Image (cartoon, rainbow, N blue to C red; front, side, top):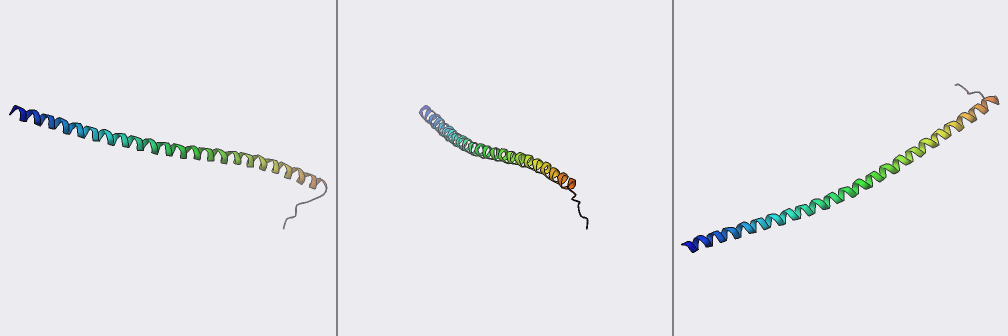
Length: 90
């Protein structure tokens, strides 16, 4: 009888160990997957940030060029008016 109890307890411990090992394996796999997904999204975020920075730089250049163009237009218009040009209204 005592052997039966010991055998049952050993079997129970063995089953608990198997369940614990399976749970540990699943947890490890989920952690690897989470790290992989996290790495992927981090790379995507870095690409997005780089794209935003590139776009912002281009916007700043375009804004500077527009300001220069407006100044040049004002100069040309002022010179044209000094030479007698008048804006026609229709």
